[in-house]
Length: 135
View: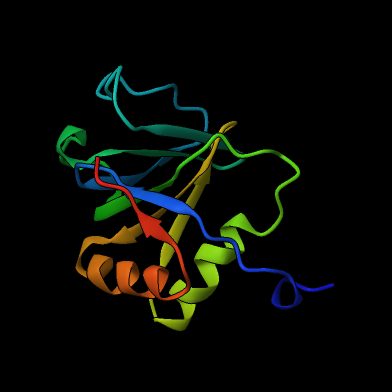
């Protein structure tokens, strides 16, 4: 069975408040002191780099970053056996020409879209049956 053969997922989504930046720091760098202690943020350590996602207002000048991203949260918690969650978001967004940056946590998934593509993203996701909750 393929994703196309299965029943489409109808997810409840929320657009998080705030505008975010995706930052690139060198490998071996510790968690930066400017990273806030609360709110939506992520640190991803991998060979060769440290990626930070946080509200763009916290990012100091001189830090390599891409600003102007909005975060869409899948209402969770999601069971680990659930298949196709990110695909149900990524495919319609790709078809609409919207670039994404995806993140997952233990409980749920997030996709970040550029702020200037947010309305196009919301339209594409509503078009495949996803609902948006007001936060």
